[in-house]
Length: 443
Image (cartoon, rainbow, N blue to C red; front, side, top):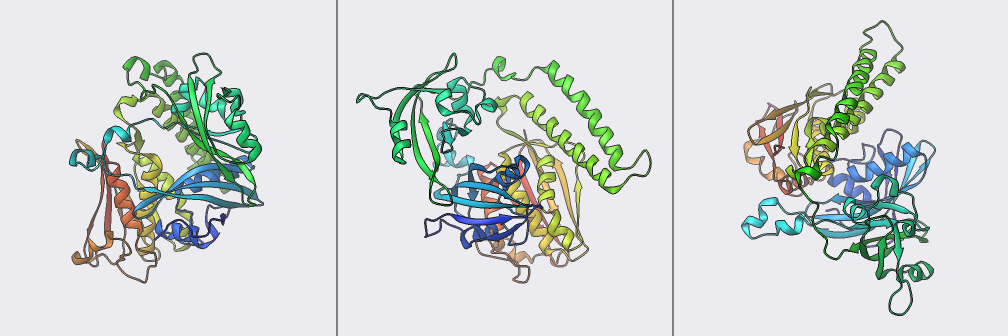
């Protein structure tokens, strides 16, 4: 099973321009296999892949915290991605094991606390010069700062540090000594900023040198974000409409380019049109998420996330001549967590690609019911016997050994889905392919 490496040194990997993991030390390779993929295929760990994509987009080194799901636990990681030519060099540190997120119904059955799961998280991280790398939305709100503008600013520009009883500032002393610290009192500098108490641990780079801090803030009297209807209307409907209209026109025009509706066009220009349409659709999803009522819980678009997962698996599918048919032409909203849903979809689609015959088709279909939203991934493989259909959801179990894999992908997928209040189910018969369905609560 994928777990923390016994050697505390950093773990290295490399990603090519297509997002494939082309090199990895054993600990990272084990995570890739646990996610249902392998070396040479698309990096199937969404949060790590997102850091690599950001570094490629910006053209500079990027460091971010990330979480990867293993079979029965999660791993908190610190990922540094550095562009090197057309490849991205990965350095992964931390490897802190934490309990896997439990199902939402556990609190009703005496297995967990829903109140604990809903508590706001006050997390922060800086580089070696105390410039902010990441700041949780809850902490940004408490400090009275704009989350987008906080990135790259010195932490001391956001928080006015205060001396302790001995006349020292623990954070400043920790920078000098390159060590962790706690009980650094401070207050947000912006109007309305509140008091905090910071604690942090040292983050080291691939060379073992000091690379910054990652930590938490204790907030006195902190309350979970308000769900008052007057405050949740964070995005004015008039502005919403004003942005949707031009973006719709951009998507329509870009799609005409892709389809060459106005005449012949070079393939690379048609590809640019596809990129424009994809970017505009992403902006639309951002606008939609801003205008939705947060009191209904975190909302994701299953169709959009499925499209993102398909892009991540284009390369291995193309290598085997397999077509992935995405049968969705409208958003399908569900309650869930974006990266967890993507990891489940990458597992299910990757599994279908591996088990489909060369030149076959993997089909994604979407259904909404009264209380659920679901996506079904269907392949044209050999199918699964009734006696094996529950066994393959157990850890290290596989339908057959010829297709490869570690037997962890489906176990992780079901665990993640159930932690979101949903499930992964199977409908199959020998010789009739397999249909795996991810079902989530409707939003």
